[in-house]
Length: 174
Image 1: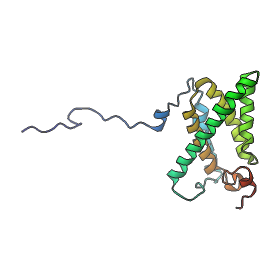
Image 2: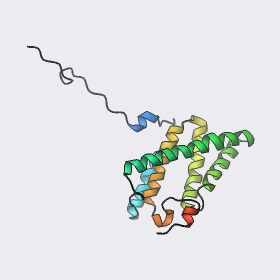
Image 3: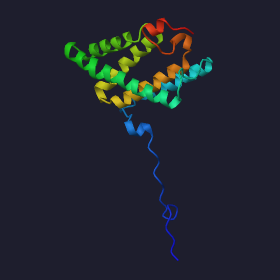
């Protein structure tokens, strides 16, 4: 009597499930993305050593919170790169000036939260530079969300005021 073949009989291995990194192709080439890959580990490691790690703030499921922040991070990158940076490139004399101006605008949008203002100034410069050479908004949005979530769990809420900006930051009550 014949029996059906199984995957084991055929000596065929099932392909590994693709990771999110495979789906967005994070390769920026020449290891220029290496700092973005390491910063999140460094942030969480510092938070662990300083005993400031804490869960994300807010009601609802963790997955929903993270998915929502991923969308918000992508939206911020879209506005920074496609709206501000591309327009600034047309009106400013050099790419460098456009990158700095876009990063300063991005940082200013995160005031008066100084932690976020400094972090977004640095990330604005890095992401605008990467965008000019690779034009990959998906990867930038993903890295932005990872770094933002790492800041959210690593820096005490008393400092970041639950990552709020503007009046929400000023009216924050612990």
